[in-house]
Image 1 (cartoon, rainbow, N blue to C red):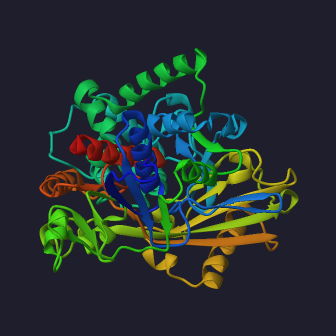
Image 2: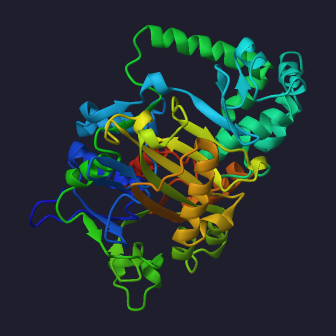
Amino acid sequence: MNSAGEHGARIAVIGGGISGLAAAHRLVELSRATGRVLDVHLLEGSRRLGGVIATERSGDFLIESGPDSFLSEKPAALQLCERLGLTERLVGTREEFRRTYVVHRGRLHALPDGFLLMAPTRLWPLATSGLFSWSGKLRMALDLVLPRGIRLPDESLAQFVTRRLGREALERVAQPLVGGIYTADPQRLSLAATMPRFLEMERTQRSVILAMWRQRRRAAAADGSGARWSLFLSFDTGLQCLVDRLAAALPEGVVRLGQPVRALRRGGDAIDAPPADAARWQTDAGTAYDAVIVATPAHAAAALLADTDPTLAAELGAIAYASSAIVTLAYRREDIPYPLDGFGFVVPHREGRALLAGTFSSLKYPGRAPRDHVLVRAFVGGALRPELAALDDASVLARVRHELAELLGVQVAPQLTRIARWPASMPQYDVGHLERVRRITARAAAHPGLHLAGNAYGGVGIPDCIRSGELAADEVMRALR
């Protein structure tokens, strides 16, 4: 970065979530690699970094208030960990508990072995499963002989799964599993924006089941050749480890907490703006920047740009968001009658329950609870049950405890509880999302020095957010050159 007396291009990164942190860190890396002096300001309105990533240590319990893992198959997060020297801190899932349950008629049923997201890849576990009726099983098998569907510009997850695999596959597996990822309504969720590989499977191999069977065989061969990482990864001290290491890697003066930005405009629009600021961006505080990376939720970005470009702001504001709450509870293992032997369970919407899903964190990752205790994370809200995320703490806790009692048989009060609320935090990739993002990208490109990053555009996971922030930083450097 710049030494005393040097003044380089001034760059603002607005938003201190993982996307903004990745963008600021990448700018610092590129500055050092190229010798180009930059004055980077990471502006965060709150008093903490990390956005929805937040880890708490309470005695021997490790509590994640937001996400608890990231995918290893998307490289951006792992590559960043390597550059930060964090790979020795990574922990994978405990393979002996690698099982997922689905609630059906008030009972937990194991997801058939070989079922990947929405389709079976092994027929015998499907045939012997009590999760589906025989007509549902036969309807899924019909995918093996169905022709390719008509190519559409976009279609919903519900439309795709129903036409390829039938309604039971949608209602009992695809909806709750995908709902756990996107907290979304499958009738509105864009398949092209969220899981384009399934469209590609149909296009190139016709049958989704056959395509996933072949993919499973390739994955098994890769595991046999010594794959280093499990599919889901975290850190020995929780995901906050990544946030803290990113913040520590930034030079002094880059991070500026408690500095909300409420508006952005071109410098020339400011009253009595100096000529040198005419082509720059100004915040409502009056600070001028040569470039800005807006790494906030789309609705916040819309508010920032409402005066500068109402059309762009309208497109950003049209991206819907869902709210959710995460309830963490700690129990003694002996107080849960159910034989816990999996990562957790998902709850189909058709079950009419408050819970979206439950995760047994202390089975999924080591070091989350004492050996004789269990740490449970319960999820409520989402696009299909938004009213539940708005309930007061006592009501949310009561609903969660009641349903855990019904499903797991636990009757005692938890030894620890935490409730984390995330209002309007999960963007909804509705049908037509990719086309909207294209319009947003084109409109933003018409404003030199303006760059967008975050989970609203090209993926909601931690690796997607890191990649988004780093790509924005790369664009800034290309424009400066």
